Amino acid sequence: MKKITFTILTIILFSSFPQLFAQQISLGDPANQDLEISITENGEVHVIHNIVKSSNVQQVLFVNGTYSNLKIYDDEGFEPTYSLVTSSANELITSTNEFISLFPTSKDVIVEYNLEDVLYLINGTWRWDYLYLADTVFYFPEKVDLLFANANPVLIGDNKGMKCHGCQVTIQYVFDEPIFNQIVKWEDEEFAVVFRTLSEITLFTFDQPRRMIIFDINEPDQFVTMFIPLELLWNPYDVYLNDKNINKNRFLVNETHVGLSVKPETSGTIYIIGTSAVPEFPIFIPLFIALTTVIILQFRSKLNLR
Image: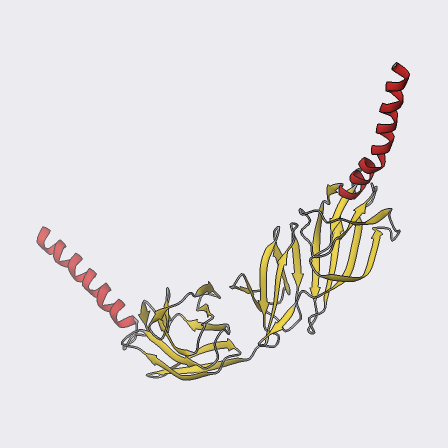
């Protein structure tokens, strides 16, 4: 009876062992990694996974999309031991059923590939709905110095990179975006309000008594970014499309200018209302009056004491 029981247990153990072994290989630990993603002017995407060495099997998910030209090598240029695994597990955050099982390695590993079907050009604006649970650095074409992350403007300037921590973000940008000035003349001074947008701007005016910039837009659902001189119109601002208050994103450019971005859903008239506007007389005059008043009051108090 003992022999029969032992035989049955042995059969069960060995029949289940391949499945257990396959699960261990296919799953593994989430890879300890960060990503670098480079985007060209034509919307071509190249992905690099920088994976830290591990004594355990690591699971490397592909970034959502269609990959090609896959290369896997360690930091000495040799190909490590790995397998491409097919799985339909619901927890995989990827559009493909394939991922990489990277076997234990004593060296850091690089996985790189080209990626398609992720970046789309819509009405002149490139868009990518990105989701990957690892730190990612995006590198953009040379002429892209302003982008939008979840509709929030990001000035990347000469850095050409944006880092995203762990990372769910909608990226939008315009390549070689039109930039133009609208000039406000006030007394002997000129102020340039800088616009960046694909939309046509018409009927631009500055209403000093009502502390307001007004203009029409003819194309809906386009980003309109302005750089407003603080000396002309002081922030914070309220923004209206016709008679409806709309969302805006404000960011400090430098000590003299504030950036303001809106994305109107329809065409119409934009009203930007500030807290104060360029004064009708030089700013040193009220300051001089205030200082003179303080001096007079102090002088009178001294006379009264005597």
